[in-house]
Length: 149
Image (tube, rainbow, N blue to C red; front, side, top):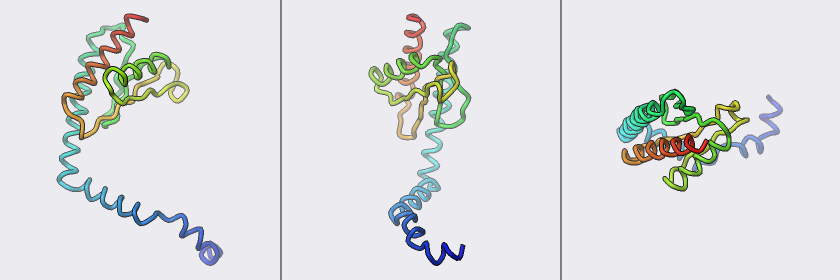
């Protein structure tokens, strides 16, 4: 330790965060702890409940042969299992092109084969109509993929 204190000063100071990063972190923390931060949390968790409720309702309408599954998650990061890399990629592509939704596939081998999924992130700046439109687009895309498989 004594060696580092006496001879590694350039290394120690070159790896410190720049002042603008520290100010950004401080401002983010203050924003999160403010009334506005609390309001945004309420909004985003309202969207999470909405999304999950609508997805469960829609997926249940597909019956027992449904291969898609909404994974449990209380957070704004949601995932829907879409088995098969090509199916997962295709549905994400469809959602980006048709619905202009920014969703991404998480493919095998990152996740086990057959457990590929679409990652969805809900934000406080979204609108209720956007959440409903996302669910509608997801379910429509799932329905089309079931017809052609």
